[in-house]
Image (cartoon, rainbow, N blue to C red; front, side, top):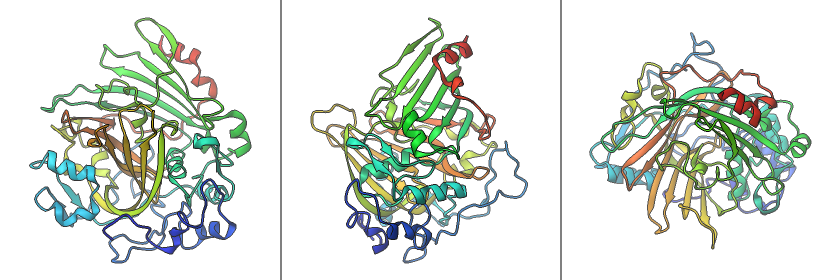
Length: 453
């Protein structure tokens, strides 16, 4: 399987028998209970067995784990099967994205991929699976694809008909209901020197609430609420961001506010979108790079290219460990490859091409989306010369107390400056709290002002 192809007649219906923007039939939805997983992945193993069958993912935490711990590696005894380097990358070319191939060429002496046994560990609560099956026959894109309706809790389009549906699956994938997290980011120089920038973050995903309904979401038009406070270094501490993300961005676009500690004022921030630079990012990522892709998809034409078997970082528990220090992770050019576990998985390939007359620093973006979780694991990002500009990589784990498959770290590699930014560093912080309870009043401009004063 050397080219991007549909893997079987099971998934062929996503490009052939389902018209764009159409709901799927009850018969096709029924496959989510048989040959497909509840989220729409192919349940069976691949032809040579290098990708196993999905049998439910991780359904219980390892012995000794308690909530609040950094997540122990359930597969710590696994051995490296083989290592891909710049010298032998041609042997494995069919499983490499163009961006990862470029990483080998850019850092021929230091970049490598340790390939491990593939383990399909992604899992989610039963109510998420049940909601996804219901969404399959009722979810719809709103005008222009800039929002959705008829869906709640689960993936809206488990059998996607087009690229827009697939990218909305990533945006709306389940990551818990309410989460607070402490962590930060680092943007090292080409020599590897870095300053750690700390954040306190909270997110309330209204779409994912167990009691959410399509009608209630359509009425409120709120997908999630997010706030971020910079905690260090001192020169940035007190800067804060608040975002209200909408379900239907035609009806009402994203609302954002910033708090400036020097001015002690909250201001509207209409530019927190698209290719505006990310918070304290040294210009190494755009706002819509955050979480690999977020926000309105209206600047691009989206094409679902099919499926491909690709090496992606998965079960990245070694990188996640609290026994690892930030200085162990951050190295010149790229993060420490000794800490990264790569596995072969099937991914959806989605290509976004900038619309004529529209401005963005990325002319084209190719996303590689894990079929089991709808998490984007790799994004190849091209400039206006049609050359690779950046490569974004999400290093995923199963947060098995939820459970959910989400990244522990996202890295955005700038091939021109030979620098990168790593977001989600939490090894030296307390672990995410998925049990937090907050109300909508905690996500207002007034609350943002009070908390920072």
